[in-house]
Image 1 (cartoon, rainbow, N blue to C red):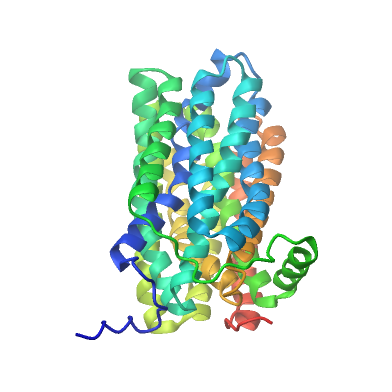
Image 2 (cartoon, helix red, strand yellow):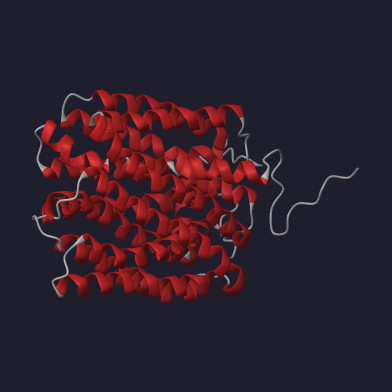
Length: 412
């Protein structure tokens, strides 16, 4: 009996079944919200216990993300040279060790150091996941596959903050960090036991300095890459601003308990999940660029309505959260479209393109975290102004750069 034909728009994927691909992608991509969101309800408590200023507490998040972004530049080239599987095994192993170190950290300085190593190792998992999409799929089908994986991420992310809040309330903030260790070990086991290599042709010259510089230049000169990468940066900037500021605003300013704050983040994740489901419907009907344009209205509306609510004096969780729900609907559309669109021109350098995209997002996150560390003043305004700015920037990029340069074409 002849082998079954591959699905329309997909490349042959060897022994990787469609279901395994989506599950693996969802779990690999979810290591980022696991690492960042689970401990957010514990952030005020660990800041007090370790007797550290708020700016140092912010560093446990922003430094992790900077290391996450920078490391992808190296993981990307390594994965193009040696394949995705060896890099996943190495990165997830280091992640598990760094997670244990974070649980046992005796001071804020040690916690920051272990989180930096954790972020660098996390970069291998997320970068390889994005590159695997390009290994297996053509751009439009890849965007649909990525949206399915990000739906799974949305489910996991929705559980992160409530889990962190409950674990912190019942046990200790260190127990919340232990969740990261357990998750990392579980994903490592999946890769060891089930996930084969997806890169069909390794590039033996990928690590040569001249070749690497040429590839980086090729990627960064692509207007398609820049358009979609700037889109992912802007929408992630809005999400990071909310995640970094909300523990202090909702718990310290508005008086929520850790468990209530966890439920608030759960509701946000559910709207993100809904956005990924909506993304698949819009892609089928409108295509990539028009889908991004529709999501731009959601991003802008979220920022403007949050500012309006705060300016009218409606400063409570019931008035600040609904506008951000709109932003998260847009985020659930922008991320799968942007991540796939950014790597689509580079079938032979998907690792480097994925790494550059991730690096740019984390530089934006680090800059936003640095600003928030100095801007948080015991009021809601840093949160409100940050979301507004990123909503405006996201919509502008969606309606201009993506519309002009967003048609995926292979770069040479």
